[in-house]
Amino acid sequence: MAAPRVIYDAKPGSPIAVDHAFYDRLAGQTASRTLVERFIVPMRSGRAWPVRAGQLFRIVAVEGPQVADFNAWNLDNPRERFWASRTKQLHRAHVTTYDRLWSSLPYLRPMLTITNDTIRYGLDADGAGCHDLLGTRCDPYVHKMLNGEDFDLCCHSNLVRAVAPTASPSSTSTTCSTSSRSPG
Image (cartoon, rainbow, N blue to C red; front, side, top):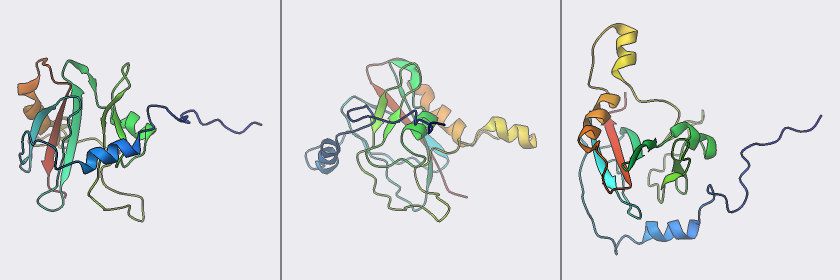
């Protein structure tokens, strides 16, 4: 019997392979950049912001351990959005520097590339780490199904409230949104 074939075996030059030197230069050239906006996403809230092609953005944990849910989609075509499960399949369960965040079918293209990761948590003995693509954000629908209560202060609702004002097409290439909550 023949050995099983690895289906997703990337060849050199595939879209999964990134130019490390290029992204290292981007990560290191902070002095020549112009800050467009700086903001803090308060705990138990959300924020959406546009990121044009070629722009960089940084997400920083400023108040100790944080949990943040992240979404991205093409504002010119909201059907093209970040696909966490495909990204996990193409890269790993815990994304980091040089990994790309891939869009949904039928587009399947890199939406973002991680240029730097300053959280040096590593992996626990059981394989847990930061920036995971393993679970889904909490939402009011599962909450109500499990206990019958209406509760709208969850990550899904925070993201929906953050994104609602930006839901019309514009010239931006990607909009990112994040929802912040305290772990535990």
